[in-house]
Image 1: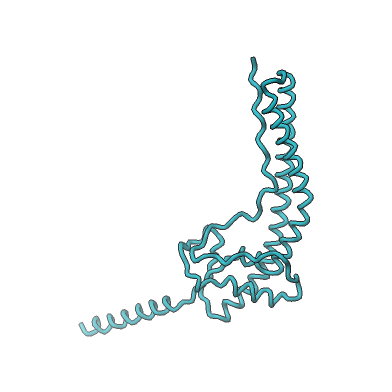
Image 2: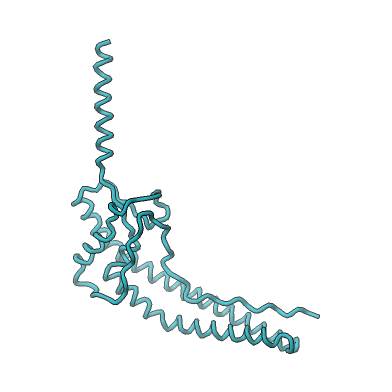
Length: 215
């Protein structure tokens, strides 16, 4: 009996110690994508990509406007045009739209690839800064809440270290990119939202005009 009662308090103390250790564990969150894009290197890279793909975007916008003009011509003249004229116009719209779709997909794929390279390169540098910061400040866990798969439903802004990491990154890489005119990403709210796509479509291809009804 005495041995039994002597063991129980020891077990209780052990459980309490584990609970205390778990409570004291320092946990932080970071929006890695926002952090990368908020650094001076990230802003510089974003501006360079935008300038590089601006001519292609202008070209796609011009082709999209031309298709829209053909669609408008079809709508306005459908009641008076001959069947042959409507058929030819419809074919032109369909052909131009397919061409625009292919060019847009190709340009988007190239942009995604280039953005991926940037994110990977800057991400490795950011992780080096994050690793040192976590060790120096005694963090047990840091979660990337820019990843929609992260099982975090809510987190206080007081544990968000995104801004601190951006500041430390810029200090550690001061010899790289200079300041740019791009505005930094806004500080996320307490509840992490799902990550946004890295790239937006360069142009939204218009729908083809409806084919004329056969008589």
